[in-house]
Length: 259
Ligand code: G1P
Image (tube, rainbow, N blue to C red; front, side, top):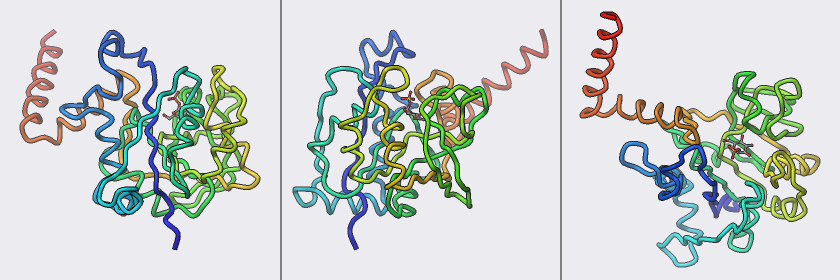
């Protein structure tokens, strides 16, 4: 059997404008949720105790050591361009892409996807509200069965009127290696950027597009609201922090009812 995924790409060149002034000094992916930076959650997800950890270990150029390569995206030309910047460093076979802004807790999304991957381009998906579709890549759905959505195409950040469905792409991808061919000739799309969504869509005739409904809980840590929700979620599960959260909530509620 060929190993399906030997390389994981973490695009982290976003400007982080929603987190200014913090991101003047600290890159967005180093912002912590509680005590752990976003990039660490992403790396742990790719290297967890699961199958993919073994895959990545076996794939290492130096046995026992996972190789980490950094490459610079010199201009902010979009996610597709950022992924293309990794082209010369990826091993053969399918590649994983993890966007650390999309924090997924509770279950290892990438491992679930790798286990379900059967070729083509696979993206994590989740249903979103109408007023949210313009923030995401949206699947043009053919069929949905259990966790698996088959799609004929994808559109980057459509208006609600033009959105082909409400199934949004969340930042986990398992991509056929030839995505790099598509990316190398990809023209700018939404926002004037080279979009990964467009490159995936262009290959739809030869590389099936599959959406995967992951079982964890996803937080949009590219926004302050998402960072707050993730912090509250983890605090509520922490034996030391849960009482602090409960005390704060009770005090706030009683202040409100007294007002
Ligand atoms: C990127 C992708 C988009 C995807 C989203 C998930 O957009 O371009 O297709 O739905 O991540 O978070 P961004 O959030 O970088 O604008």
